[in-house]
Image 1: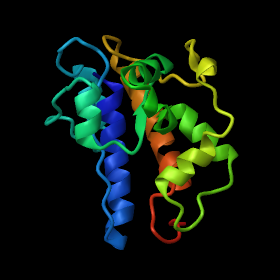
Image 2: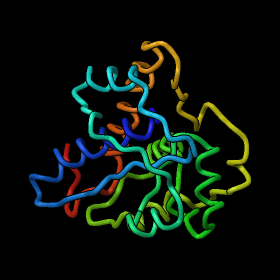
Image 3: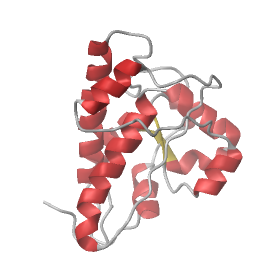
Image 4: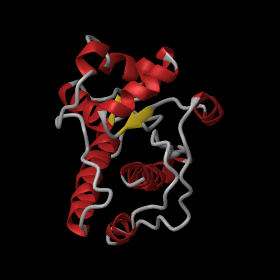
Length: 183
């Protein structure tokens, strides 16, 4: 209701900007694990607008097996370990390509950079070496982006700032290019 639309919008914008020059496209979609159907928090909308992100057209949708299959997700990013567990509970085969955003950025920053031409699948497989589902059972601020829903605007700004940094790092470190990554 707050974090996912911001992360999706920022990631789509960053990938569009970088991939357009190469004639490549990436599609980023947002879906949530919360069963509640509520409007975006106005503070999230305002905080996102402050960084040039328009969430006015966002329509919340629930992530489920048909959504994952229909979207053809090559990568599922969650904002918390609890959400990651929900994705894997839908279908355990999603584990190798499902990460919290913080976990994936951390793993990517500790690994050698994506090689030119390395596929997303190969990169994810490499980053997942030694990864254990049991290690992701409890909440951990090292892997969870705080949910600002219902909090003052400063909490939403902090979330947008944090997610912006994470998305920028992910785009810089990931295999989003068919040739060499941008400098």
